Image 1 (tube, rainbow, N blue to C red):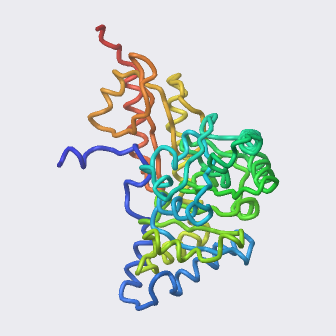
Image 2: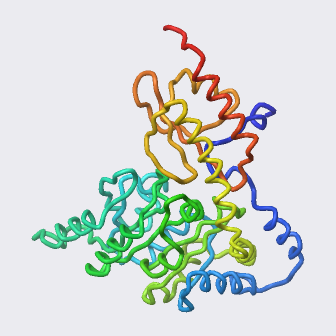
Length: 358
């Protein structure tokens, strides 16, 4: 066990617990009595803060425990039995949710993405092809578009791209749902031009991820479309997402939404990710995907990864050739500079050492 805990983890952004301010607030309110199931004052206060930040008092805000739970609950609430969700082939709902969407009775209509993103043109082409098919009633009807920002590959949708996708969705009568599991890192990234008010304006529903951005657990689902607001709590309960001690969720978002804490801690992760990027660029390491968020996808020699494996944990992505693999290096709100400095130093040493001939 000692070896496990002596490792430095760069494989994800949810290895740590929660921000100290949240832990402090949880301790201070531990014996506070409140109503259950998200009907408490902390959930109400957090929802009010989110509505204010999004500049829309009409938004419905609900707090769920995790991202997969949020995805399947939203999609099940939005779709009728014959309808499906459009998403990139790399979409979380298509690759990493154990068929949860299919388990709710809906098909994921995956289309090829470029660096994790899909376009308004692709969405329109898929829907029009379905409608032009003389056997359209024999196939799943596209009804919802699922996007992640940042995507599973760390890339971001620009405001222009989201505007175009939102416009197509409204033209074709589709719901637009944005998965914001890592939204904080997107909002804080260099070059990002999308804000929370933009998401509230352009999406029918999106969520603000807490699990990966400072909370112990929790996602805030934000609904702008009135048709999706109705009976949503029934669907939360039916899908096992209605936490009896719901105040634990509301309190965390109450803290995260105060004084820009959410984006401030995300910006710290971005700064450290940029330090790693600069180090890799100086070593002329190619990237599987270029992005500006907290996920980095370098292609490294197998020999270098072997040297680093005794000290660092990365997330394996794929083999690029017989001698190189792509990995994910991930920073988080809790990543410390000392660990990033050590990684950069060890990368330089490992890359400088001559490889042994086979």
